[in-house]
Image (cartoon, rainbow, N blue to C red; front, side):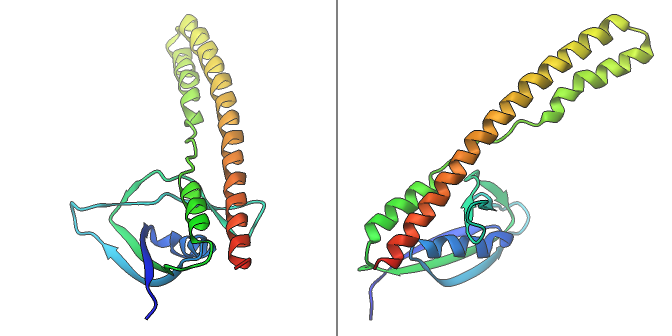
Length: 176
């Protein structure tokens, strides 16, 4: 009997297949799965979302390992032979891939709050407040939209790095 190494991942039910696809790129094969539904009061931590990679449409990229709390998740059990070729290199790539952190974007809707308050002050008759609130809203919107653009660029770079890691892992698997 062949000795194997195992790994368990917990994901949202909608992300079961994408996680299986990603793990298979690192040489893991699905050994079993278990769907878990927690009763009231109990919750479990799972991995973050996966999104389609724009450069490799058949692959998925980890978007965030923000640990979400769900009461319904799937536990996936993966196995790989201990003497698997290039296992140490694949493990290093896998660790690098799952350690990538995406930056969450602030909600741009917050910038519209001063505009709404300014619009409300128009009906109350406080034109001085209205002007100040509109200016504050405009400045807030400008800075937040620039910050969101910078975050999008940074996240895109991380997404491209994730695609490169998956490509390297595939090459290691093919080159066995």
